[in-house]
Image 1 (cartoon, one colour):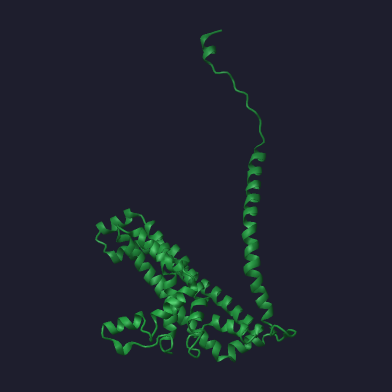
Image 2 (cartoon, helix red, strand yellow):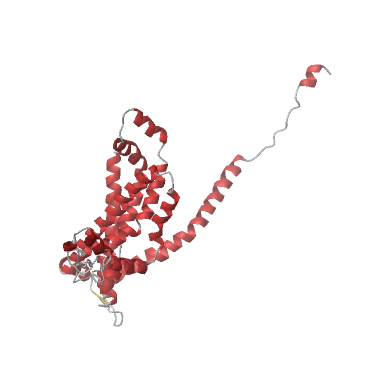
Length: 316
């Protein structure tokens, strides 16, 4: 045997395999796993969200007081709501003002505070924990807290500060004045989740590449130009998602305004949600209350569609 034969590697025997079997088994298992993981949340969403909405939709075509037999009335509840109920439209306008204040506080102030957190180097973690505290405090505690803050007699924090700076003439019972009550009940709701949305926006700002900011500053860009041209475009997807959360929650806001004023004085702080609740559980008009609940769902869907439509148009 020559030396070249010794150096020649021995031929390896290839084992035949079924490539189709390997390429089909794994995707099949993956699809099964995905379906198994998705099944519980889908069932939960269907049973906890879609089914109540469907039941409200069906009930909205009936007149029912919870005791006697249901009477089919067709679109009468919707006709009454849209054309014959001034209280509903008053509550709807109040809801829009309430929403605007919440968006201004949670998105405007939240984004501003998030930008300020980027400049803080010491005590940043403590501040983040403090911002999140209102989100975990019970609604009842928040309502009691702001009742004391707005109190006129005994003097609360707001009126006390006004007196301290010589603005006694502005002091008033904020929750009893028809001109200030809507703003007064909106501020606690905005403050309640301000910290949560601040942390979300702050985390998004941390993901902005520092190289882009440094390059912009070297080119002479100021702080406002860095924010509008680099930071905000980079966090736009997170900002849009956060805005959807703020808007939909604002349109469904109920607990804090209801506990603070119960829609009063008169109808000055009545929201669509509080009006729906009282229509159902005080007036026992469940059919009409269901029609109002369907309206709330529709306005939330419209608001989400408008937000994403504007964002898509801005990207184009």
